[in-house]
Image (cartoon, rainbow, N blue to C red):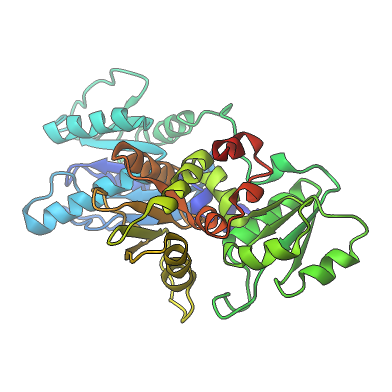
Length: 400
């Protein structure tokens, strides 16, 4: 995949934090070599997190995030701080910018502790070294810089790159499940909810990774499954379907052919598959009046037969056999207090970075709220979850 077309969810998220007027935006502009953020002497110039996808050598495709000051004041200020702290959920590397003329504050100390708690690699950058004798860096994770003169900026970029573990294992979406020469059958419904003129991101990414592995993905609609299978000289290695077509597809694909969904593949790729499989079991214990949170990682125009607001709730109610209350969130909205919900059903999260998916699963786990995702929930409702996990025998044992 070309660097300049890499989806935001696949980019390393580097976020800059600090107090108002510490020089966060100036540092962001200096690091990127672009005027991405508005710079002013007025406190609180940055009000909402600013995201910019770019290439940052030697890291490659990254997402740079400039945030509002963590010491903002007043009612609006508190809301800005809340949005700043929400960025932590998707941060891979944090840069804490401190005004070298003022030194480290209580807010800076608290934020540093939050980095440690969340196990986020971080760098402390003392800015404005041109105006003062900036504190001498006390560790390999501290550096003195000047956004005005450019002093230390190259070293800061190098230090950011060093926070990435080069030998860290990379999760595969599908490459570890296939070998060169395998034929894959991808079932892609083209209905009123399908975007015009393009495939959705999960479909694109599976096709791309399959091609890179030397496999041969064959695509068809859910209305041509039987014809497609008949034209193949031998059965495909697996069939991958859009979740909403699970019921129809499972009836047409012979039992000897492994069947799964894009959503289940993404559950394994972005977070923890066992978590969403265990969460699906909660569908069997819902009762009248229970509240179910349906959360999507992106915002989009709702269709009349939308999967998240229409199809999925209907399948869940039919499976549970009771009256339920559904609540929806989308994009960056995700409640921190989940105590009112009996179950969380998340989308495949193709637009969210793995860090945020894992954070959401983490807070649900801490509060004891079961969490599953679209594909897993739909497979369970149709009684085919065990079959949809044939590619993952260790996880499938949970259902025994």
